[in-house]
Structures are given as C-alpha cells and as structure tokens.
Image (cartoon, rainbow, N blue to C red; front, side):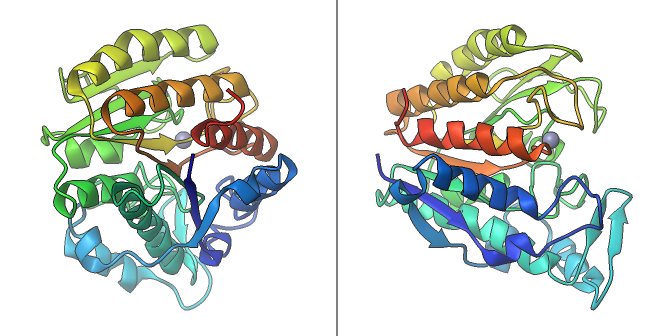
Length: 309
Ligand SMILES: [Zn+2]
C-alpha cells in the first residue's frame, strides 16, 4: 500500500501555554513511535503547503480568515476562548494543517498514493463555519472534504470521526450538504455539550456515556455507521482521527484500547476498498496522553498501510 505522511515544522511551534494538553510534543510523539515500530520508512513524506484563502473559503467566511490574521499576536498569547489561544506561530501552523489536508486529498485522488495521514496540529473538528473554538482554528477535515467535492468533482464523501468529542464544527459546516455523510462516536455529556440528532443519510451521531468501552464503541460503528456507509457508498473516506477516547486520556472517560483503533481503521479501510477505490485520508484531531496517543496513532497508521492485519 502506498501511503503519504504529511506534516510541517510549524505544527511543533504552535503552543497555547505551559501545561496545555494540546501540546507541541503530540506530533513528535507519533513520529517517534513510527520510527520505533519500523513504519516511518514505509511512508512517503511530504511537507504540508499552506492552504490558500480560496481553499479555506469553501468552508469558512473570508471574515473568519481575516479575523485570525488580525488576532495573530506579535508576542505572547491571544485568547479566542478560554481553551484556545494563538501564539505568533499559530496562524502558520493552522494554514499548514489545513494545507496538509488539501495535499493529502490531491495525492489520494490523483492516484499517487492510496492512503494519507496528516500528522498536524492544531486540530480542526471543533472549528465551525465562522468560529474558532476547542483548540481548533480552521476545520482541516472539512477543508479536505470541500476540496474533494469542489476541486475534484466528487459527489459523495464520508467523514468518520472517532474523536471522543463531538465534531460540532464539521457538523455545522456540512449539515445541509447531501454530498457529505458524517459518522461520529463521542462521549456525551462532554465538551462541547451537544448531542444533535442523527439525520438519515447525512449524519450518524452515536453518543456514548462516560465509562463506555470497546463493546459499546464497536457496536455503534457496526450497527449505526456501517449500514449508513454501505448505503451512501462514499467515493472517498476521510477520518477525523482523535485518540482521546483511549482509556488513558486525561480529558475524557471512555475506555477504548489501541486494538479498538486498529479495528475501526480496518472497518474504514474495508468501506473504502468496497466503494472508494481504497482511498482514505486521515487527519489528527485529539489525543492528550502522549503514550496512548503515539501507540494508538501508530496502530491506526499501520492498518492504513495494510501492515499488521
Ligand atoms: Zn477530542
């Protein structure tokens, strides 16, 4: 399996203050684990370009992009919400994180690779149409989906979001778009404290109560996601890959294991193999215990590569 791995040094420079869980070490921890597992050299490495205003403006109003540029501080931190701050390097990292998703989509849809993983931060799935929130500035996976639809002419794109938090931003952006199927598992109640209803054929939301583990997660994916995905028959599978539903994560209370991330990745790949020519683009969202993040992401990437099955 040919697979791209896309990142940028700016993703290690964005920081939101000492002790913030969405920390620069996250992307390095994943890369280090891939080296240790002997997977790094199987990946085709690319440096992320900046997303252009045109690419961002498919999912965010130009005012949102201009506001972030205006708020970008020359020094220190500028807070957009109590958890979400910009340092001088944040805008560059956010542009590269979104741009990584554009490049990943181009590489996969042009047939240069079959799979791609964007090892980027800041994450994106809480960023709504016109609101940065929850550690997110631009909605990276939404930028990828819009690029696939608008630039490559796809008709059906599925977004699978197994981050422990609801991807409210992705839902806000695509809730009226019949070309996108959004499948989500998330702990509820938990930030952002929303539990919107599913919409047949468009949104499959699977809230899981605190303490839920492998069984409940796998049942939701098998019984709720899969029938919707089979009916929708996506031409491209995108993954909002958050690893904060792992039992060790400090921000949430689900009980997933590394094996669950390998399993759900296999499920995503099988859907892609059946309907989408095997094409999968995955982008990093949450995951705040560095060891759990690194081992879970490595298992995810190993399965995307088609290794270890
Ligand atoms: Zn999360």
